[in-house]
Amino acid sequence: MKKNMYQLIFLTVILSLFLNCGKKEEKEEATTAPETKPAVTLDPEVAKGKEIFDINCSSCHGATGAGDGVAAASLNPKPRNYKAPASEWKNGNTEAGILKTLNEGIKGSPMVAYKHLGDDSLKSLAKYVVYLTKN
Ligand code: HEC
Image (cartoon, rainbow, N blue to C red):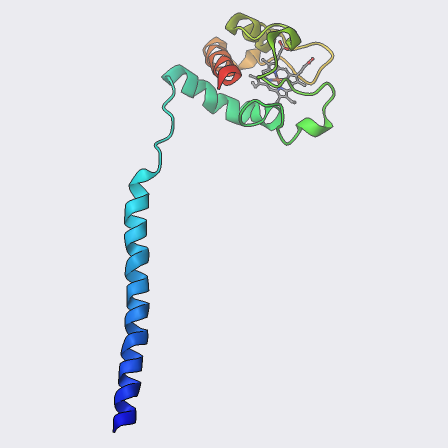
């Protein structure tokens, strides 16, 4: 009879430990969830440029424009790292310089012209590339 009592107490202790564990995790989740930072909100035109960039350009230039896209390793010359100083750019890292690159491409390099995307898209793209030079 006494032995059964001990077993019962032992089981109750173990069970309550398990239950408390579960409760603690729930609490932690509840307090950490609201702390996740909201995504950076971009200017609408820059955001449109990002959409076009992610589809057409990131395979070579990388998602953040570091020149490290999946195709970059096999390319010569290498895709421009947008954080590189202006002196390393052929047409310059201004919106106008980038538009020239996008309209004409760079001769003798895998950087072809993207005129077919249309002026509006090229303008958004140029704004996004300028954004990536600084962010
Ligand atoms: C096939 C790979 C590839 C793709 C796709 C590509 N690029 Fe490039 N890009 C390059 C390479 C390589 C260079 C470097 C060319 C050089 O140094 O002669 C370059 C250079 C550039 C430059 C720098 C030009 C300068 O003045 O030096 C800009 C800006 C640029 N790309 C923008 C883009 C944008 C925007 C897109 C998407 C519409 C894009 N690229 C798609 C490979 C690519």
